[in-house]
Amino acid sequence: MKPTNLLFILSDQHNAGVTGCYGNPVVQTPTLDALANQGTRFECAYTPSPICVPARAALATGRYVHQIGYWENATPYDGAVPGWGHRLRENGFRVDSIGKLHFRSAADDNGFDQSHDALYVVDGLGDLLSAIRDDVPFRNARPGVEAAGGGDSTYLQYDARIADQARQWLTEHQDDEQPWALFVSFVLPHPPYMAPPHLYERYLAMDLPFPAQWRPEDWPQHPAMDYMRRFFSFDEPFAEDTIHRLLAAYYGMCTYLDEQIGRVLDALQTTRMAANTRIIYSSDHGEHLGGRGIFGKFSMYEESARVPLIIAGPDVPAAKVVRTPVSLVDCHPTILEAVGCPPAEADADLPGQSLWQIAQADDTDRVVLSEYHAVGTEQASFMLRDRRYKYMHHVDKTPQLFDMQADPDELVDLAQDAAHEGLCQTYERKLRTLLDPDAVNAQAKADQAEKVRQHGGREAVIARGFFQNSPVPGEKPRFSRH
Image (tube, rainbow, N blue to C red; front, side):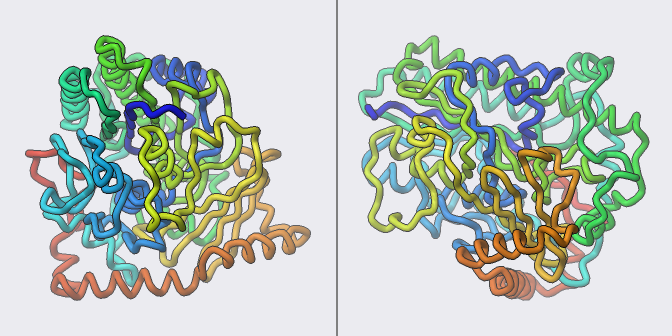
């Protein structure tokens, strides 16, 4: 591949199914749809962990969460494990970020030459309460669902600001002689579920597709999901019109995000750099939208663990759909290859593969991993996904198994059928060739207990409280204690 510039656009909590190019018949995402038509769309792309901070640490380093120990939103990336930004900079490439990082602080060497208007975790600590994993105070997330609607928010304002700064950055670097990498990280469609009024009203008037198993009688009765619903106070069902309002807000947020991405890509055209720039679009994780009785992320179901992933630019096949399973950890070698940066010897054991190469090849079978060690769970969960099956391993609980070709909505848990016991055992053995789930779970909990101790103990951490959404730069966090 000839080296080019690399523009990496990341969103936050974008359910892949709420994108036109992924088959949604209602949502209007013309920018992303056009990008997919110009390039390659990955049908089976997954987050390394369905929650912000661990996903972003894995994305930065190209390593799975259990390899780097950034377990939950109280252990933010601090640059201690070198990432693709460090590798680019070591080889003389310009690498900047604009927008949300959700790393520890600006004082750390996060691998960027400059981080513009960056969102870091609160007080360099993040959500400390999420480090308490045993006898945990439950959280009431119902108000955020009930408040969904139309209006303004600091997140809408922040994303417009990020797009403005990205356009300015592209203008300033249009004459650079050496390839550069720019990481533009939006915060939408992460809650609060608030869309510009005209977009909210547009979708509120539509018949919107509801997510799988949204009705209480259809909720999957698995102990991990039962606990998650109780933890966030979702065990009492919401009215159908409440879910419809939330969907209208979320769809509006996705359209607004698409507009901001369009403004950035317009600047790429205006500066005449489009022909010499490769583009990656993805999100850190998905969003349940009421599917399985959950709002937010946190699980290994498609709504939460699957992410949109599109690549475009020179040498990228046009209008191609790839069904080889991929992961955000694949972005590390992808970014280096795009700009012509040689891989470091220390990164020879990275689990990822270049998406440019996967896009050029025929579909093949491959196994990708996701894991979760954070809020809403009693024990760790792990996911293996290949071209046909998804296996979910819950420590100390029964596994789940879905045939993703015959049952893409994950309605029939094959693990409940004795006829598939052998297949579950096969996937558990595959998982154990990658890691020891019990040992990883124990290590995560030990690290989390130590973090709680370092910050004054259980009662002090509980007294600090939690916040539903990270504040944008300049905004104060609003803590809650219930």
